Image (cartoon, rainbow, N blue to C red; front, side, top):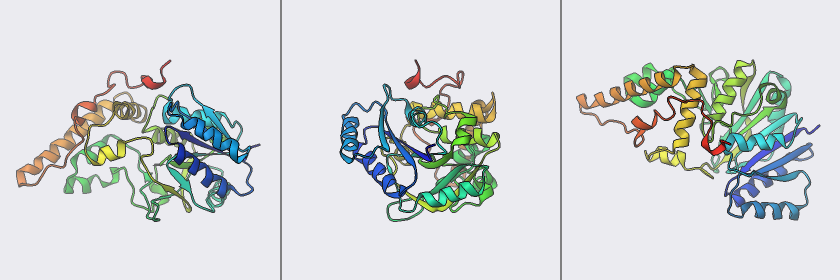
Length: 319
């Protein structure tokens, strides 16, 4: 049985993907492993460069899967995991990430010490070693108000609903952890099924962790295992959030889908009303001469994306 299967998606990031694979091979040592690179229909020739590099290194642990469509984050990693059935553990790894030396031993030690750990998250950090926020509370109705209000008294009142957690987190605070780099127990994957490919990008990691925890599995943060995450290798959303630009429609589809799955049939509606209440609070700052914290461009409209059909499949993966 394969001990560890590593899934990495390439989407027009050939050089970064090769660097990510190199870091994995260096860190694996003599562990039994398989590394699956899924090219998500890049169309830029990067899949051919990766195939040539794999042939050049002659390491039979590495293989390339060429997807016929861009199936997004969930769909791509589902193909990666399906290419290595029966693995004890699956490492989901972004192409814009590198694992540090000694990466695997602490994760495996934690997993073997507690058989109920289904998701084991390493420390994500910048290249200079500064820690990144990678553990979070689950998004919910009141977290949307907290996100939209961005006002001192309300933010303090709703601090228990703020999604990012201060690092390092307390174990009982963690709802979910970033899937930029995370170890999944194979037994859990086989029990709860693959990731939901109704998500193209974003929210799929929180949904999968929510599904896992509802099935009795737990998530842990193991900072002794370290990975560099450069962020933004094949997607612009984080930069767009910082610059308050209009976000892609797939982001809002994912948000609506998640709120339906996490909070029930009225979840998307209640989340939107909560966000609107938060924005009203934000605008009330004008009454005391304070500036209004900005939202993303057209967010008031985009939050209603797919409100009537929250579980519709992502168009990018629709047959």
